[in-house]
Image 1: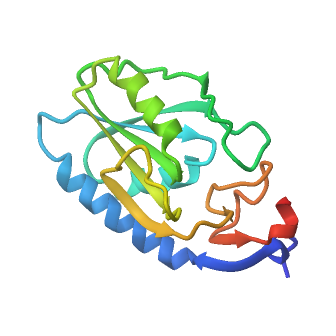
Image 2: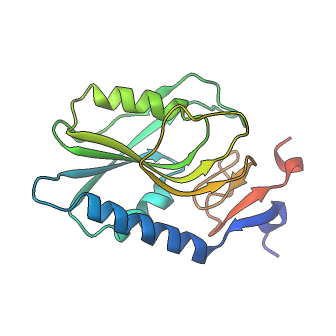
Amino acid sequence: MDTMDKDIERVLFSEEDIRQIVQRMGAQISEDYAGEDKDLVLIAVLRGAVVFMGDLMRAIDVPLAIDFMAVSSYGDKAKSSGIVRIIKDLDVDIKDRDVLIVEDILDSGLTLKYLMKNLSARHPASIEVATFLWKDIEGKQAAINPKYVGTHCPDAFVVGYGLDFAEKYRNLPYVGVLKPEVYS
């Protein structure tokens, strides 16, 4: 047994599940952004979304550019602090371009809401969100409604496929639920 696998309570999405989800999302995005009048820029929110971004951009068959932002709202904690800081800003100008923010997981949506407001002030032609996972939190409505959703996941501490706990588990090829004793 792999040393990281022993910390996983159960696998939610296998490598094959992930591949199918990303292919479906890529096809829909390709259809929506086809046309000469589109100038698509994918913006990954580092670090978690980098794995998803790599797969998603290969599943999209229209011209696109990529860039990265790093924001912090968690610090070293398991729950969001609610305070958003931009650690790394964009290198490209997004004015009059079609921006698609690529995110690994949506829970409260507060960080993405802040990011969308920040990027909207830069006057893109459009701005949308593609999230791989949307966490279903009972009694809570996310602050944003993403246009593209890979799949929903339970309100559990999930890792793998770019998602981490204390910078570990990102390289797992699947998404799994982390055992509570690991993070509590």
